[in-house]
Length: 292
Image (tube, rainbow, N blue to C red):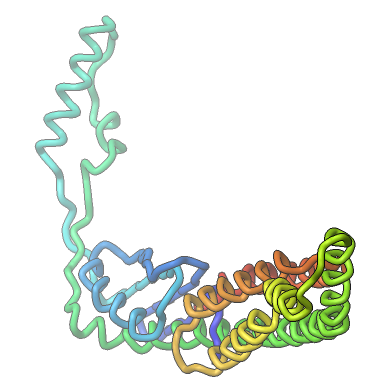
């Protein structure tokens, strides 16, 4: 089952005095990267959360936001940072002196200064807290993976439709080439005879040279390889693993064979069909960028 790299999952738990919410989303990325937001007192849980994500996801940029309120944790006493208080007081005195400001430095001017007065919170037991957080994280990841797989299913339908269309275009190219192949021999022979009208011709040598020239325009090998790559693309869609990079490689090979077919052909209709195949390959490439 193929999986997209974009999706969103959410889970929450509200029980007694605990309110926990986990939201996780993902977008396209060549590698697996994380951006995790946790409450400060739970920052040490980040490696555990990364292990959960890594076990389920292979590619994409993953955003996880966790909020955790526990009324039982309790707040500790207020704490005054005396070093910052001394710094602020000295700073205000310097301002008064430098700019000849009147008035006294009062308590009101201190209480709203940043990080001067803080509330000490009790550090939670991380192991016990993790027992609460882990299943909620797993549920959010489950929901994310479900959305990614649903989008992957939609992409698979689009892939199949485009591969079918490429096969039909390739059939038309083969039919056109087969119809033209015999005429190539006749045109080459006639042209050579016109150029060498006064010179005796070795019919066997002429036939050999014409065959060699026609073989240079033969696209049979390229069409066979292109069909093989189409089959390989379909087989990759059934793999139970991350296939995004594999699809990208297969598409590069498909594009290479298509270019060769176009460069070998002097027929306008075949060239037009090659352009149509390239258009479908480009759409496949764009879509494959979203596959894990």
